[in-house]
Length: 226
Image 1 (cartoon, rainbow, N blue to C red):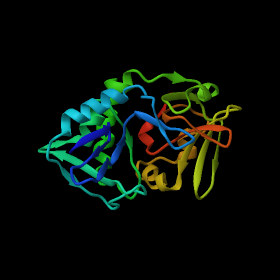
Image 2: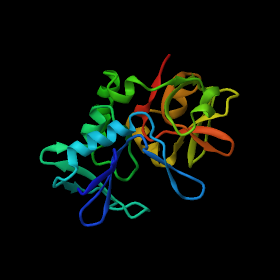
Image 3: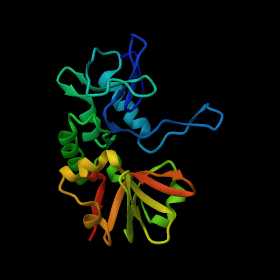
Protein backbone atom coordinates (compact mmCIF):
# COMPACT_ATOMS: atom_id res chain seq x y z
CA UNK A 1 0.00 0.00 0.00
CA UNK A 2 1.58 3.26 -1.14
CA UNK A 3 -0.87 5.55 0.64
CA UNK A 4 -4.31 5.41 2.24
CA UNK A 5 -6.94 7.78 0.88
CA UNK A 6 -9.47 7.45 3.68
CA UNK A 7 -10.77 4.82 6.07
CA UNK A 8 -11.79 2.32 3.41
CA UNK A 9 -9.69 3.16 0.35
CA UNK A 10 -6.00 3.10 -0.55
CA UNK A 11 -3.53 3.42 -3.42
CA UNK A 12 -1.34 0.46 -4.25
CA UNK A 13 2.22 0.69 -5.53
CA UNK A 14 1.09 -0.69 -8.90
CA UNK A 15 -1.09 2.42 -9.44
CA UNK A 16 -4.41 0.75 -8.68
CA UNK A 17 -6.91 1.85 -6.06
CA UNK A 18 -8.55 -0.63 -3.69
CA UNK A 19 -11.92 -0.08 -2.00
CA UNK A 20 -12.67 -2.36 0.95
CA UNK A 21 -15.75 -4.52 0.57
CA UNK A 22 -18.48 -4.79 3.19
CA UNK A 23 -17.85 -1.54 5.05
CA UNK A 24 -18.22 2.22 4.66
CA UNK A 25 -16.24 4.77 6.65
CA UNK A 26 -17.09 8.48 7.07
CA UNK A 27 -16.02 10.67 4.16
CA UNK A 28 -12.95 12.92 4.21
CA UNK A 29 -14.01 15.00 1.20
CA UNK A 30 -17.16 15.86 -0.71
CA UNK A 31 -17.50 16.55 -4.41
CA UNK A 32 -18.51 20.07 -5.47
CA UNK A 33 -20.87 20.86 -8.34
CA UNK A 34 -17.90 21.77 -10.55
CA UNK A 35 -16.36 18.34 -9.97
CA UNK A 36 -13.64 19.47 -7.59
CA UNK A 37 -13.22 18.04 -4.10
CA UNK A 38 -13.63 19.97 -0.86
CA UNK A 39 -11.94 18.85 2.34
CA UNK A 40 -14.90 18.46 4.71
CA UNK A 41 -14.31 15.49 7.03
CA UNK A 42 -17.32 13.88 8.68
CA UNK A 43 -17.24 12.76 12.29
CA UNK A 44 -14.68 9.98 12.75
CA UNK A 45 -13.41 10.33 9.17
CA UNK A 46 -9.90 11.36 10.17
CA UNK A 47 -9.75 8.75 12.95
CA UNK A 48 -10.84 6.03 10.50
CA UNK A 49 -8.21 7.14 7.99
CA UNK A 50 -5.47 7.11 10.64
CA UNK A 51 -6.50 3.65 11.88
CA UNK A 52 -6.44 2.36 8.31
CA UNK A 53 -3.04 4.01 7.78
CA UNK A 54 -1.57 2.29 10.82
CA UNK A 55 -2.89 -1.06 9.63
CA UNK A 56 -1.82 -1.02 5.97
CA UNK A 57 0.26 1.93 4.77
CA UNK A 58 3.69 0.86 3.53
CA UNK A 59 2.86 -2.80 4.13
CA UNK A 60 2.33 -5.82 1.93
CA UNK A 61 -1.33 -6.85 1.87
CA UNK A 62 -3.32 -9.76 0.55
CA UNK A 63 -6.52 -8.95 -1.35
CA UNK A 64 -9.35 -11.44 -1.48
CA UNK A 65 -12.01 -10.81 -4.12
CA UNK A 66 -15.72 -11.60 -4.18
CA UNK A 67 -18.02 -11.91 -7.20
CA UNK A 68 -17.29 -8.43 -8.61
CA UNK A 69 -13.61 -7.54 -8.86
CA UNK A 70 -14.00 -3.85 -9.76
CA UNK A 71 -16.56 -1.07 -9.33
CA UNK A 72 -17.75 1.44 -11.92
CA UNK A 73 -14.82 3.73 -11.08
CA UNK A 74 -12.30 1.01 -11.88
CA UNK A 75 -11.31 0.50 -8.23
CA UNK A 76 -10.50 -2.98 -6.99
CA UNK A 77 -13.17 -4.29 -4.60
CA UNK A 78 -11.63 -6.55 -2.01
CA UNK A 79 -11.29 -7.89 1.49
CA UNK A 80 -7.91 -6.75 2.78
CA UNK A 81 -5.56 -8.75 4.99
CA UNK A 82 -2.24 -7.84 6.60
CA UNK A 83 -0.88 -11.13 7.86
CA UNK A 84 -3.72 -12.59 9.94
CA UNK A 85 -5.44 -9.20 10.41
CA UNK A 86 -8.73 -8.81 8.52
CA UNK A 87 -8.61 -5.05 7.95
CA UNK A 88 -12.25 -4.60 6.91
CA UNK A 89 -13.39 -6.37 10.07
CA UNK A 90 -11.02 -4.42 12.35
CA UNK A 91 -12.38 -1.08 11.12
CA UNK A 92 -15.90 -2.30 11.81
CA UNK A 93 -14.93 -3.78 15.17
CA UNK A 94 -13.47 -0.52 16.47
CA UNK A 95 -16.46 1.54 15.33
CA UNK A 96 -14.69 3.38 12.53
CA UNK A 97 -17.03 1.96 9.86
CA UNK A 98 -20.59 0.91 9.18
CA UNK A 99 -21.62 -2.30 7.48
CA UNK A 100 -22.13 -1.68 3.77
CA UNK A 101 -22.95 -4.82 1.84
CA UNK A 102 -23.86 -4.77 -1.80
CA UNK A 103 -24.92 -8.04 -3.44
CA UNK A 104 -23.55 -10.18 -4.94
CA UNK A 105 -20.43 -9.37 -2.86
CA UNK A 106 -21.54 -10.89 0.45
CA UNK A 107 -18.90 -13.56 1.19
CA UNK A 108 -18.23 -12.29 4.72
CA UNK A 109 -21.60 -10.65 5.39
CA UNK A 110 -22.59 -12.89 8.32
CA UNK A 111 -19.27 -12.34 10.10
CA UNK A 112 -19.34 -8.58 9.54
CA UNK A 113 -22.93 -8.34 10.82
CA UNK A 114 -21.90 -9.97 14.11
CA UNK A 115 -18.92 -7.66 14.45
CA UNK A 116 -21.03 -4.55 13.86
CA UNK A 117 -23.70 -5.65 16.34
CA UNK A 118 -21.03 -6.04 19.01
CA UNK A 119 -19.54 -2.63 18.20
CA UNK A 120 -22.98 -1.02 18.43
CA UNK A 121 -23.82 -2.76 21.74
CA UNK A 122 -20.51 -1.56 23.16
CA UNK A 123 -20.94 2.00 21.79
CA UNK A 124 -17.50 1.80 20.20
CA UNK A 125 -16.25 4.60 18.00
CA UNK A 126 -18.89 6.40 16.00
CA UNK A 127 -21.66 4.32 17.60
CA UNK A 128 -21.10 6.25 20.82
CA UNK A 129 -21.27 9.63 19.10
CA UNK A 130 -23.92 9.35 16.39
CA UNK A 131 -26.57 12.04 16.72
CA UNK A 132 -30.15 10.74 17.15
CA UNK A 133 -32.57 12.99 15.27
CA UNK A 134 -36.25 13.19 14.40
CA UNK A 135 -37.39 12.59 10.80
CA UNK A 136 -38.45 16.23 10.41
CA UNK A 137 -34.87 17.37 11.09
CA UNK A 138 -33.21 15.20 8.42
CA UNK A 139 -32.61 18.15 6.07
CA UNK A 140 -30.28 19.78 8.60
CA UNK A 141 -28.01 16.72 8.55
CA UNK A 142 -27.69 16.24 4.79
CA UNK A 143 -24.59 14.20 3.97
CA UNK A 144 -23.96 13.23 7.59
CA UNK A 145 -24.06 9.89 9.40
CA UNK A 146 -26.90 9.96 11.92
CA UNK A 147 -29.54 7.80 13.57
CA UNK A 148 -33.12 8.78 12.76
CA UNK A 149 -35.80 7.73 15.23
CA UNK A 150 -39.47 7.84 14.31
CA UNK A 151 -42.66 5.89 13.68
CA UNK A 152 -43.11 4.14 10.34
CA UNK A 153 -46.63 5.19 9.43
CA UNK A 154 -46.76 3.46 6.04
CA UNK A 155 -44.63 1.40 3.66
CA UNK A 156 -44.80 1.72 -0.11
CA UNK A 157 -43.67 -1.43 -1.87
CA UNK A 158 -42.90 -2.36 -5.45
CA UNK A 159 -40.81 -5.12 -7.04
CA UNK A 160 -37.88 -2.68 -7.10
CA UNK A 161 -38.01 -0.91 -3.74
CA UNK A 162 -39.61 -0.67 -0.31
CA UNK A 163 -40.01 2.85 1.08
CA UNK A 164 -40.56 3.44 4.79
CA UNK A 165 -42.55 6.63 5.37
CA UNK A 166 -42.42 8.60 8.61
CA UNK A 167 -45.71 10.53 8.84
CA UNK A 168 -45.77 13.88 7.05
CA UNK A 169 -42.01 14.33 7.17
CA UNK A 170 -39.94 14.31 4.00
CA UNK A 171 -37.64 11.64 5.39
CA UNK A 172 -37.73 8.08 4.00
CA UNK A 173 -35.99 4.81 4.68
CA UNK A 174 -35.24 3.17 1.33
CA UNK A 175 -34.59 -0.55 0.78
CA UNK A 176 -33.79 -1.56 -2.81
CA UNK A 177 -34.58 -4.96 -4.33
CA UNK A 178 -30.92 -6.03 -4.18
CA UNK A 179 -31.26 -6.12 -0.38
CA UNK A 180 -34.61 -8.00 -0.30
CA UNK A 181 -32.90 -11.45 -0.15
CA UNK A 182 -30.81 -10.29 2.82
CA UNK A 183 -33.93 -9.32 4.76
CA UNK A 184 -35.61 -12.61 3.81
CA UNK A 185 -32.56 -14.60 4.90
CA UNK A 186 -32.71 -12.79 8.24
CA UNK A 187 -36.37 -13.83 8.63
CA UNK A 188 -37.62 -10.26 8.23
CA UNK A 189 -40.81 -9.40 6.36
CA UNK A 190 -40.40 -5.66 5.80
CA UNK A 191 -44.07 -4.60 6.24
CA UNK A 192 -44.68 -6.85 9.25
CA UNK A 193 -41.42 -5.95 10.92
CA UNK A 194 -41.59 -2.16 10.60
CA UNK A 195 -45.05 -0.80 9.77
CA UNK A 196 -46.55 1.03 12.74
CA UNK A 197 -43.33 0.57 14.73
CA UNK A 198 -40.99 3.17 16.12
CA UNK A 199 -37.56 2.41 14.73
CA UNK A 200 -34.06 3.76 14.66
CA UNK A 201 -32.31 3.69 11.29
CA UNK A 202 -28.63 4.58 10.99
CA UNK A 203 -26.91 5.83 7.86
CA UNK A 204 -26.00 8.81 5.74
CA UNK A 205 -28.73 11.35 4.91
CA UNK A 206 -29.12 11.82 1.15
CA UNK A 207 -31.43 14.05 -0.89
CA UNK A 208 -33.67 12.72 -3.66
CA UNK A 209 -36.40 14.74 -5.40
CA UNK A 210 -36.85 17.19 -2.49
CA UNK A 211 -37.01 14.31 0.00
CA UNK A 212 -34.36 13.07 2.39
CA UNK A 213 -33.49 9.44 2.85
CA UNK A 214 -31.22 6.81 4.27
CA UNK A 215 -30.55 3.92 1.92
CA UNK A 216 -30.66 0.74 4.01
CA UNK A 217 -28.04 -1.78 2.90
CA UNK A 218 -28.62 -4.31 5.65
CA UNK A 219 -31.29 -4.97 8.34
CA UNK A 220 -28.63 -4.58 11.04
CA UNK A 221 -28.80 -0.78 10.71
CA UNK A 222 -32.48 -0.78 11.74
CA UNK A 223 -33.43 -1.21 15.37
CA UNK A 224 -37.07 -1.53 16.48
CA UNK A 225 -37.58 0.64 19.56
CA UNK A 226 -41.03 -0.68 20.50
